[in-house]
Length: 371
Ligand code: MRU
Image (tube, rainbow, N blue to C red; front, side, top):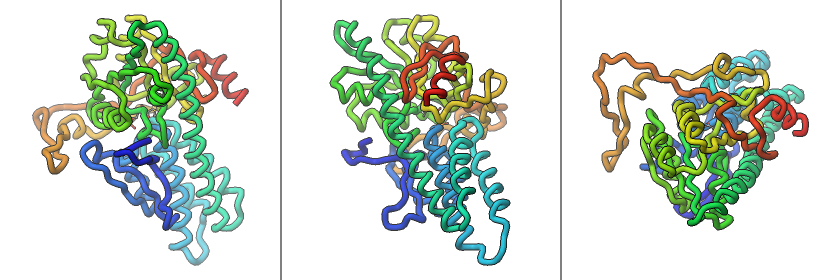
């Protein structure tokens, strides 16, 4: 998507040196635009943990590149005999535990491992890992564009029924192009609707405590000329109750076999408000974000609990630097849950790259059978 008129993806290998992975530093946005150069598997793990890169599909892709960099390191460091399998499985364990909720990380690492183990030489493994990491990115772009097309058709239908034609979409967190490789999951329909000349306005929930809505989603929409308004997380119910929302679209970090969706903390309350106001609630989910081994999202999905500092302090920009200020007293007791689960009964439909499906086991099994 566009940044100051120039096209970017969120992650790529340096065109002059394929041993370096480049990514947009999302911790600097929207105040600064910085590209980080990740040179080791550990650099990527730190970038995932510290949310320099974030969003389920993007951390999957980053995890894949991390395996590739781990193999390059093995080539540089270990000249004599050493146990490559043991080394790789330790690295993969570190990568997949960097963030626990999004299933994409495990999914991508497993895909890479499958390709790598088929190769006999270290160089063969390195080449296979790079090829697979690039394929994961390319496939994700295609999947998101398709999600965008299916979601755009829903927007189009709603628009046709409205006098002014303007469709008000409410979203939570950032499930735009910054969370994936390009287009986004929840925001892909919005971008494609704009491409098709439809009129869309997006209600952006700020998404405490890290404010991915206010900092990332609003910035993306602004860069791409889409009308939006930031609201507090608490205002979502109010705008729905007052007829200002036509549909909700969010992403999902892990979707169960039964259609429960797990997304950024606060999504569940947003879905409840949508349900109470008879507003359709869609989750945009590429197939890489399904976990078919899980049936009950509330009981079975591991929910990340992050540092209490994210709630104790709030970040702000003073015109020169990003700073942190205390927003409660230092000894306050805090819990910082990163995600919540919206049970399938509150989900109108799941927008996938193969079409929009019902959030139930039958439709999800069929999606994967035909996929
Ligand atoms: O903690 P984050 O910023 O990585 O959380 C991201 C989300 O919750 C997104 O909505 C999500 O990954 C799903 S779609 C890209």
